[in-house]
Amino acid sequence: MINVNDACDLCQSPGGEIIHQGELFRVVLIDDANYPGFCRVIWRDHIKEVTDLNELDRMLMMDVMWQVEKIVRDVMQPEKINLASLGTMVPHLHWHVIPRYIDDAHFPSPVWAETKRVPSPQSLLARQEKLPLLRKKLQQHLSSYT
Image 1: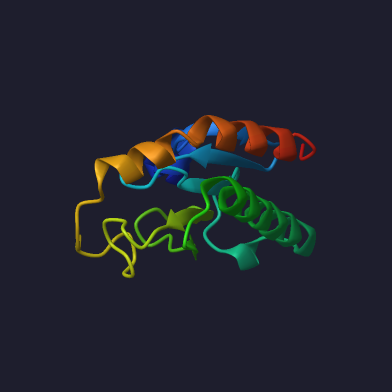
Image 2: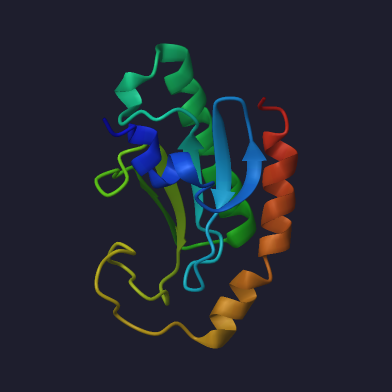
């Protein structure tokens, strides 16, 4: 019999650069050259849906996601934030927090759609330069979550 955790990418790897590791969740920064500031909030245990959590854990997951969204917005100054919890490819509860810009590779389509343009190197560099502050603010704010 196959252990589901052995086949799950988010059970086997952090899923990105760990910014905060709590007892029940972690927040990671995704290394995506087209989307600096792309974060994930990943539940520790292998579950598929938010409704698999008890009420307090659901509230925690949503609160952390909203906090990450706010910090990404404040630091990265995107045109829009995309929040996504798909889980079809990786059926492990996680949320994507993706800063979006009018000149990004896919705007206004989802980041998983066909590419519409090549972002300017200057725009990407300006966003990359904000990542140290984003890491710092996320770590500071999330330190109160155990």
